[in-house]
Image (tube, rainbow, N blue to C red; front, side, top):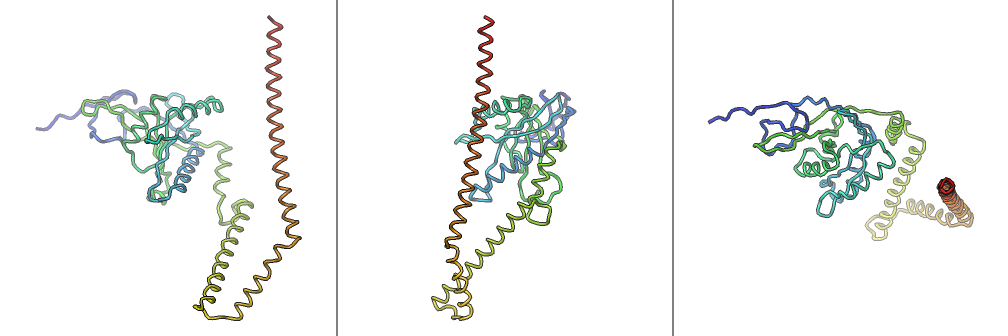
Length: 323
């Protein structure tokens, strides 16, 4: 016997809506509620999430099993207009639970620096939404009644795509099997940049080893790195050749051995008195500059502390005079 179709009612994103949804479904491609959510995403957030994932991938010994990284999204919210401006990382407890104490402490610290920023939601890496993501989302709802969820897809299938591998979801409550359930609803977004961000992104984009677009320092460092790598390869080849000659697995060549001996004879020149004097002088100069920078920083901190002390002492003196 066929069941009658479920009735659908249009409400806000926080109200319950009866829809024909599977029990294990977590995402709705399109919401029945026309809420008009507008999301502006800043490039700084994308850079932070990418850097977080890159560090986790480098620290992971198995590249095929990179751990999921999560963090908090900060920004401005005016009604249904959301501007995601910054983010910071979250910490998981040993039993893979969200450390809410760390989250509150970090939020208070950011509130002191950016008093206008609010906790808008959280981010994660992955290709599909999992039930663990919904559990974390409900924990974040303790700090924001209607948080948003940003997912950065780091899978290899997205590397050749022209679109940004980013999905943003908002949460809605629907009735599933006569029970209220929170579901993710995909929402659109647009990139919003400021002048300072454009300069920073442009500088990061130019950090490439090819062409003349990179900075002079970057080009110099890449050239030095390539020269050292090439020298290391050739030294290994000479060592392998000498080892083979010693074991008599490679024939003895007088011409090659004379060239190797000539190269080795230049090495003791590095241990000369002139080189040691020049090296120590440059080393002392670097230590002196570091010492002076430390003194300057300490003097600046001491000066600020004295100014704050004088200001507070002056206020206390005025209060005593008034009483």
